[in-house]
Amino acid sequence: MRSVMSIAHLTFSEALRNKIMYAVLAFLILMLLAASVLASVTMGRTELMILDLGLGGISILANLMAIVITIQSLQQEKESRTLYVLLTRLSSRWQYIVGKFLGLAMVLGGLVLLMCALLTVLVYLFGSVYPLSLLEACLSTLLETWLVIAVAMLFAQTSSLFLAILLTLCVDIAGRFTTVIYQFGQQSDASSLRILTEIMYYALPNLEAVNLRNSAGYISSYASDLLVHVFTYGFIEIAFLLILAAYIFEKRNLS
Image (cartoon, rainbow, N blue to C red; front, top):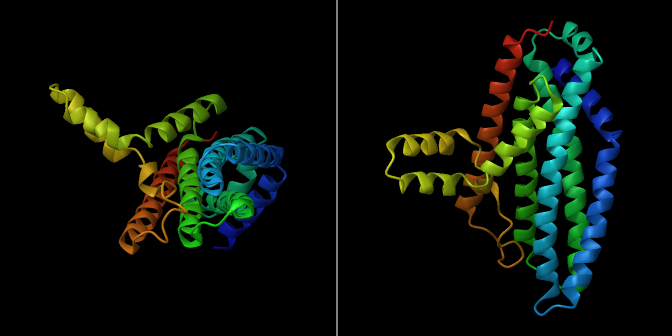
C-alpha cells in the first residue's frame, strides 16, 4: 500500500505542475462570466440558466482534462524512462496503475469541486436553487470524471499519444449514447447489427448512467434508490476498468 500511495503522491505533484489545468480553469471562469451575462438578458430564471450552462461546461472541460492529463502523464513517463525506474521499486505492476489513478483522481477531483464551488457562488449571486440536488449533481460529475480517467488509463497504454486520446474520446462520446445505440440496433432487421449494438451497449461505459445534471437545482433532491444506482454503477465500472488496465499492463512487454 505504501508503494501505491508513493505513486499517487508523485502523480499528484506532477499533475499540479501541469499548466493545462490552470488554462482550463481560467477558461471556465471566463465562460461562466459570459454565461451569466447572457443569462441575465434572457427571459426566465437567470440562476437556473447559469447552473445548466455551468454544469455542462464543467463536465465537458473536466472530461477533456481527464483524457489529456492522464494519457500525457503515462506517455511522458514512458518516454522519459521514469516508468522503468518506478517499476523496479514495485513488487507488482498493478500498483503503478492504481497509484496513478489515485493521484489523478485527487488532483482532478479537487479541480472539479473547485469549479463547482465557483459555479455555486455565481448562481447564488443571481438567485437561489435547491442546494442538495446541486451537490448531488456536482458529486456525480466528479464520479464521471473519475470514470473517464479510468477509461483513459486503459487506452494510455497504446504506443501513440494521438491514438490514445482519439480512442478515449470516441469511447467518451459513445458512452453518452449507449442507450440510443442499443435502441437503434433493436429496431434493425439485421441480426448482426443487433448483436453488435448489444455488445457495444454492455461493453462501453455508460456515462449517462452517472449524469445527475439534468434536474439539478430544480428539485429538492434525487431519489435515494437512484443515487445508490448511480454511485454503485460508477464505482463498479471504475474498478472493472482499472482491473482490465492493470491486467493489460502486467502482460505488456515494456522493453
